[in-house]
Each structure stands twice: as structure tokens, then as C-alpha cells.
Amino acid sequence: MKFFKFIKKNIGIEDIIIASLSIYLIYLFKQQYVKIERMSEPLLHEGITYKVSSIWGSNAAHLKSHFTPWIDSTQGWSSKLNDKNQTIEMSFKRQIVKNLKIQGRIDGAHGQYVKKYHLYYKLDSPTDDKWISLGEHTSETKNNDIHINPVNGGPNERGVITTAIKLEIVEWHNHITMRVGLDLAPAPTPTILPDPAQEPAQEPAQEPAQEPAQEPAQEPADQPADQPADQPADQPADQPAVQEAQPAPKKSSSKAPIFIILFLLLGVGAFIFIKKRKSKKN
Image (cartoon, rainbow, N blue to C red; front, side):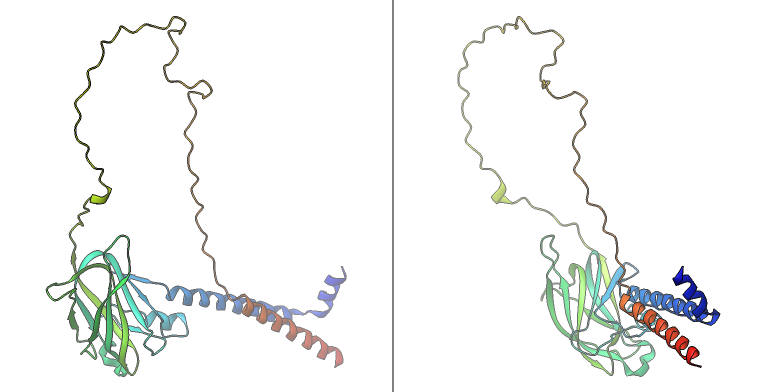
């Protein structure tokens, strides 16, 4: 009761309005944080999933406009940092990659484009997913012109069969910005050959031995006529088979900035407390 009397005596309508606005601002901040987090996730466009190391922008609108990495997009992919650790990956179903296509930032804005990159493709193996280097390559495009780089797995190979392509940025102009695409073709179905090491060795055929003459079988005297032949004695006939337990689906956890929310609430409380102290002194 004393607590409610203290609230009624010391908190007015202005304090309630300030607290409500603070809660609303916290809600907006959290929504913005969630949008920013989602913008950093891999992006699917026309059968290709794009994944990048970083994106330039301080809010969801900037991140969205600077993460349009496909050919002829309205912007391109702009990295947050300008260093040689920036990468862009493209994953897709198993296909033949014939050509890599590159553009600079749309209309050559701000003179931003990539000059050199290291090209990788993922090994076409069900047991090994390591990246195979195809060496460093240069790009001659600075704007909307498409630079086509043939993808060759060897001196006499035209294209590579893979499920992913990666570019590691080596050199750029002004800022790392690019648009990337692929020329793809259906891949043949892989032929799985048997492992000769796992095949059992064939033994030489043996002549069948002479079997003795069989005597007529005698029926057991005390066996009931209706008893099933191979029925276990202690197991019920209609007992269901045992099913393996399936793991429960993992719940996605939200990384909300709890420490910022608590800091804002503490600030609101301190503001109300100081305001009341000043009004009592006056």
C-alpha cells in the first residue's frame, strides 16, 4: 500500500507520458536491430544464394540498398570495410559454371568497383567441401558494362561442376562495390562406381557331397495342432515396433540488446527521480 501511495503522490501525468515514450522508443530500436540482423543473412535471388562478409550501412534501409549483388541490380554489394578479408559467395544446386560476370556500382557512381579478386570453387564431392583455387583474376569493368571471365578447371576444361563459387577481393577502386552473376548449365548425374576393396572375394565352387538317404519325418506326439511355429512364449503378438526418438527442433534465439534496454530504463528512472527532487526543493 505504501508503494502505491508513493506512486500516486510523486508521479504525475507528465512522468507517465515520458515513460510511455521511452518504452515506445525502445520498441522501435529493437525492431530496427532485428531488421539490421536480418539484412546480414544470406540472400536468395533467382536460384543463387548470396553470402557476403560485411555490408555497408548503419540502418536497415542502407543495408538493404547496399546488398543487391546480382547483375543489373539497382546498386550492388558494398562492403562495410575496405580490406582483403572481404568475400562474396554464391551457392546453388549442382551445376556447371561456365562464366563469371562482373559489374561495378550502378552507373559507375563514386568510382567504386573491384579491380582484382581471387576465385574459388567448391569441390564436387559428397565427402569433401573444401575450396579449390582458380587463381587471381582482373576485372575491366567500372560501371554497367559486364566483364565476362571464363571459368576453367584446368588447361583443357571448359567450366567446373560445383555447388558454390567464392570471390576474395584483392584490389579495388575507392570502395569495394560490385555486382556478380554466373552462366550456369545443367550438370550430368554423377556415376557412383562400386569400391573394389569392399567387394567380397569369390571362393571356388565346391562339388556337393553325397547326402545320406532321408528318413520320413515323424510328427511330435504332444504338440497342439493350433500352436504357431516360431511364436516367442513371452512376447505378445500385437506388440508395436519400437520407434527411435526424433530430436526436437531448435528454437531460434533473438539477440536483442538487453544491456541497451536496461540502460535506457535506468536513464528514464533517474530523470524522474531528479525531477521530483528538484520540485520538492522549490
